[in-house]
Image 1 (cartoon, rainbow, N blue to C red):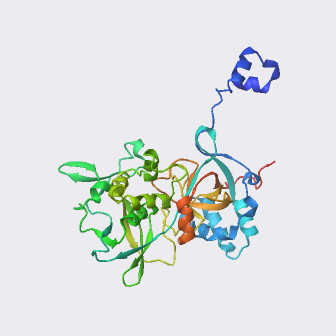
Image 2: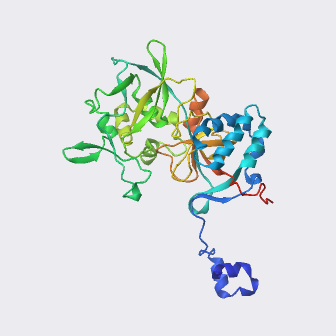
Length: 389
């Protein structure tokens, strides 16, 4: 049944006074599509699609195949065929993607397909396996007294949420916050993994989720995300904006670090406004990148963190945005292989830039507008080509 608004738009013979009033008010009865992965679209709608170096994305695809091939017959077939692409050219990989996937628009709030693209990287810190006057800031392993509470089978509103607690008496209460853990007499004393020489670097390591530690004997070890205390992530950059210390345009990894350096007496209080706390585990496979939430090594500039409630892990994505400072187009095939406490919403991605100076700079400054398209496996009974104009 046609709505009054639809009849107004389709038939000029029905343009009455009420129709004119409706049209002048913007056809407010037309509801925008719901946020999330939406309608299928055509490859020629993906800006920059022809220009990517698709062969560089192949390792990220192949790395996740052992896991995704168990998810569905479509992924099993895709991964079986992808094995023959090891030495394929950019054109051959692009054709493979076009033959096996269908692009879908991802819609944000109010029907818009534009959102926020940020970045993260793998930092290197100086550390020691034993504490001393220089190395006195601990990285903790998962605490032995922390409980993981799983109630989402009874309370649907808890699905996808990290609920952590501890027992006091006969009551389960929220686990310690950052302010409680980082106080001089920490309740986690004795559960240190190692110690670093910079408290701010340790704080930012929590945000990045993984990193490398240069030890005092010259050797290198890796630390990776193991768990989290269940408290929500709060961006301290936003807090600095709210107090007027920095403007929205000024906020970056570097400017936040500078503020912490020049305000040492206020630094811990600011960091405590982010109650989220990350616990780490040792990793020794340093020839590969850190592992994301999909438990596969992250590939620089081909792996992204997403909101897994909206975008299933492993989904190939086409991201179109710009690089900070230059507004140079940044359009490429990436894979949803990680998650993050600050990565919420449909048109939202956090690009893993790897390690090194370039990665640190891009990750620290990246806060660009952009669009995301989900490339979903083509059903077995679908037509080989879409009717695209």
